[in-house]
Image (tube, rainbow over all chains, first blue to last red; front, side, top):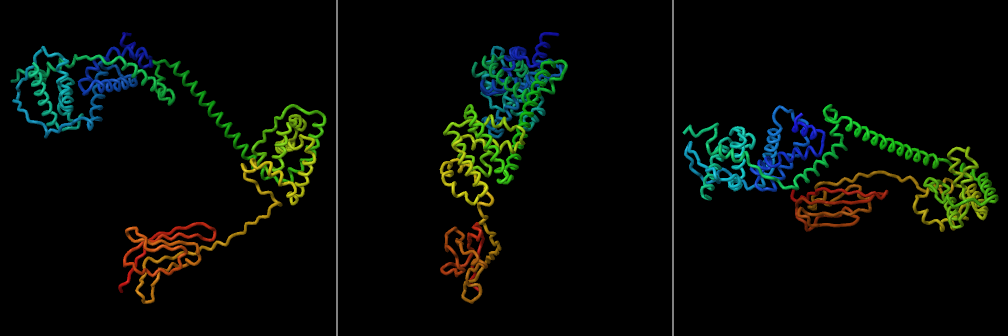
Length: 179
Length: 339
């Protein structure tokens, strides 16, 4: 039995030490995910806590078909999306019609230099409108398709597409201007 | 520009994915503390509500400890249930007992007085015993018809620090519960030799309840507090049932919804039929804006709607019938003058 399996068994039995070990193993990377989806650090921590409450109380349903990290990651992402949907009315939500048009040529590849640190990119991302950031996260990082994103967020496919391209453009512009 | 497309993502996207995917951010240290607290709360809730049971019988988990916890909780629940059940039985028994006690005629109880009083007197003369334990008079003792006799004896007990009845109880254990209660009651009376005369008087008074006025006054003065706490139960033979059956004939008030005060002799007044059967009444009429146009106590069917234009008005009629129960009728009334 590997160390990870031991931890999982302990978590199923409700062993507090095993739960802490699991949390300590994944807290940094999962906090990174939460930071991408949430506007502030406090909100991200809330989402992280909610996600881990779900993980630790439902870990007996983990079927060990995939790795535990991807299972945890999926729960964290879903919790973040739920949190976004729940708090949607509280966010400053800009409608598609209010957005200034930005011309993007089809297939134009936006350049991003390697010397931008993740923190800088994240800072720029946090300045994006909330919907843009969620779409960008879901499409680029999580690998959802536009159709799936539209279903998850209850928006149009076109909205998803346009928000993604605009998010890309804004990030590009902001990064280059900061440079 | 298909060369830039890689895995469905542009270079920009893939770079972004690489950067963001591996992005890590250490959360605050206190997060684990919060999480631990929440988990603890959830564990407690699970334990209380048996939510964890379903998965505890998974062989991979610590079945034995969970089972032990479960059995302990079952045992606790069983104890609680048994306790509640016994309590309920006790209460019900007391209730029934009270009813039986109340239904017994006072004469029957009084018959038990002389031998017991004698006994207690004998005991008192033999040896003054222990302490004043029987100052506690149970509720059902006080509620019984001969409450008036019990209470002063109790007070004598407490003031004079009289002897107990423990020995008395032991002396006649064979009696059934009713007689037992009666005996404890009258032990209180018979505890003090000074009270013998009073006992005798009480006894006589019981035999002849009509003469009870002789001794009622001082007794009542002594025990106004206990008297006021409990509703006195009417002693048969002492008080005549003075309540006469009230004739209850209900007269229906028939209120019209329209009348025509135009002086043609028909329906010129606002007449409520049978209102004279309810002399205690008050009528209030308001217009549609809530402004009161007519107000009268003991209305005599004489409102002819002078200086009031046609239209719809609303009346509120309150009355008392002979049994003093109040009634309230509200409704609309229309005034029409033109033919």
